[in-house]
Image (cartoon, rainbow, N blue to C red; front, side, top):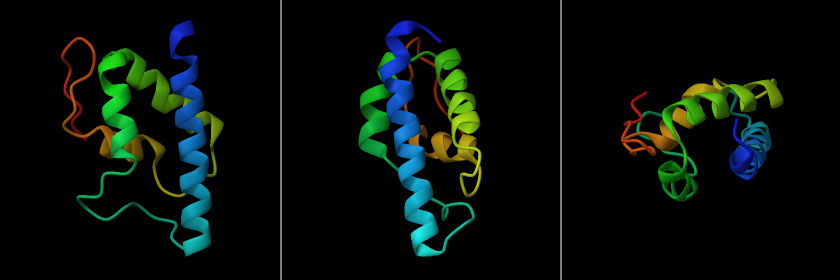
Length: 94
């Protein structure tokens, strides 16, 4: 991942850890309900700054950094970015 994206990756890991803690506190360990788009404001801010490859690198790095995330980290970020265009024009579709 490019050096410029380290801040975005750090934010993504922080969000995943916060979501993990929130779900554990609420007793929820599975996937989010259909139509839920977590951290949408953050995703809208980040989407134009990352490419499709960056997005893939980001979700796999978060999956590795937060292995005890309840549910699927990849699907979590796909839902957050659902329908948004990334740098280069790629559309995120879960």
